[in-house]
Length: 74
Image 1 (cartoon, rainbow, N blue to C red):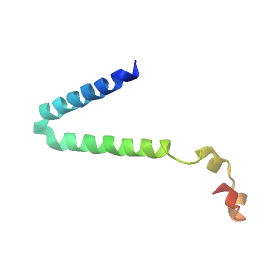
Image 2: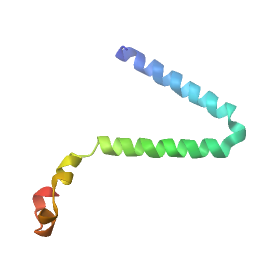
Image 3: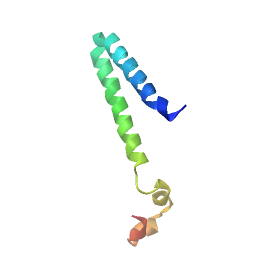
Image 4: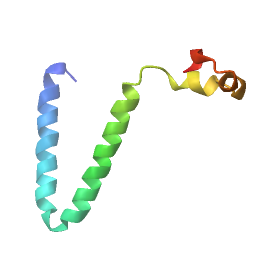
């Protein structure tokens, strides 16, 4: 897909989302819970994507590294 089509795809998804919310307005509690869950997942995904260091560095550290206070692993 061309980069010029990305805004069109975003607008189409936004419009479909608005239509779904409007169609499900009688089930506002369920829609609210679903949107809150999706927003939470989005925040977590963005946080992971913006993490400054890879998680493998922390997983590779062992108890001895923590016990002697090696600051290189933090």
